[in-house]
Amino acid sequence: MPIDKRVLRATRIILVHLVLYGLLTALYIATVLRLLSAPLTRLYSDHRTTYAWVALALIAIQGAILEMLTTFLLKRLRLFRLE
Image (cartoon, rainbow, N blue to C red; front, side, top):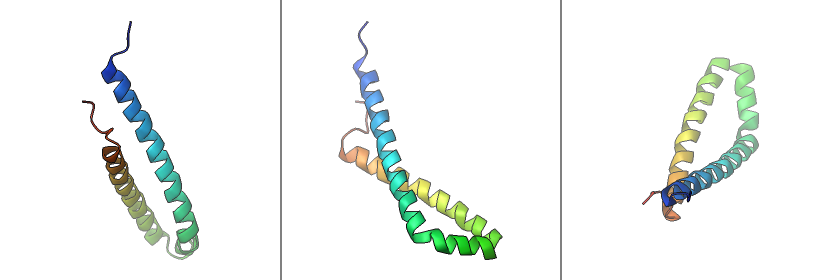
């Protein structure tokens, strides 16, 4: 029983999406650890409520930026559509 071409294309898109998202997430984590480690540690020690809000903002911003970058890259690679 042959696998439908649409299923293969969808699988390929999902795999590329996962790899791109993984790479971008690793890059983001390395950047944040390098640039924001000391300020976030100080903020955690001195102002925990502010730290919580900053952490939530970083999570939301990370998600939005990574999604925009991944979508942009998939469109540039012409892998965004199933057609």
